[in-house]
Amino acid sequence: MQMLVKMIGWVVLLYAIYCAVLFAVQRQMIFPRGLVAHGQFSTDDTLIVEKIWLKIGDGSVIESWYLPPVSIAASTRSPAVIFAHGNAELIDFCSAEMQPFTSLGIGVLLVEYPGYGRSSGTPSQKTITTALITAYDALTAREDVDPSKIILYGRSLGGGAVCALAAERPAAAMILTSTFIGIRAMAANYFVPGFLIRDPFDNLTAVRNFPGPLLIVHGRNDEIIPFRHGETLHHTAKRSYLVAYDCGHNDCPPDWNIFWKDIENFLHEAGITD
Figure 1 (cartoon, rainbow, N blue to C red):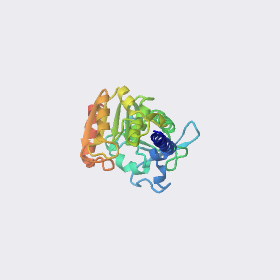
Figure 2: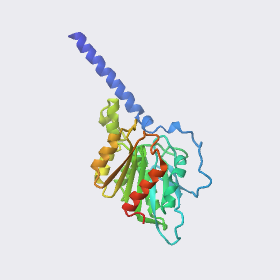
Figure 3: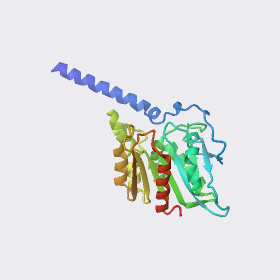
């Protein structure tokens, strides 16, 4: 009996140490900014990019890039999308990918995360949300942007970032690609209790409360964020469209032409574009 008690005690102790280690390193796992070398990438010289530096409440300075829409009259206010990237990316990766929005008459604001790339600060749910709120307020104050037609778009971790923003600011539509229902749900894969998660990114609650149209794009074979996450978000949202592709996480979408056609159809149905 004493041997059994000792064994149980060792198991409990080892599990406590395991949880303590994961608690200590969880932000390095969620925000692996060290995987991308500082200043390694730059924008495509063929793109029209307006670089904007935003100062947030903790004193950090955040880099953002605005891509203006193509062929829009100077007196016209255009829709705009705020894009949040994945956890091991930079805005440098995304400018060319997001350029098709500009051909639809939609401006694009790429917002860097605190501590990523050339931005100062430390990434967390709080600081990322603050950065996006600051970017949103600056975007909607522009004379060339229609504040009633703001689209929030997040990929992977960026889905959590824009869901957090949606809880603080209104949006005409939202797009989530390869996004999870919440970090606490992901923590279960590591046998860690949810209350230890410092940055929960509760996307399920966010989409449940989001009143506008929502497009969810997810790979059926996603090996990092299983397809069931996209299905759950879809069934929880009030006005949701689910587009499933035969792909994994890092190769989603498998066909960019089909993807942009799906985006264009969604924005038309949502009343963002003509």
